[in-house]
Image (cartoon, rainbow, N blue to C red):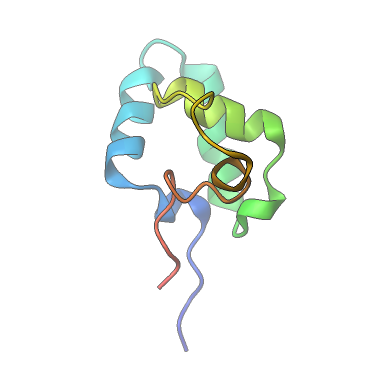
Length: 81
């Protein structure tokens, strides 16, 4: 039986690296985000604020994304294989 990965485990490597680099400067916010991702399995469980914070602390813009991309965050998370 395959174990379902948390969203933290599914972060794309480049996104995780950017979040970790911002952890030094914004430790409280980034660590709170990592805690949330470590407890969450489904992208649909994230709030808009969570998604916004992911973009901010991974130095990614969200203004160029359409609603579908923001809703499912495929540019942030890997598939749950």
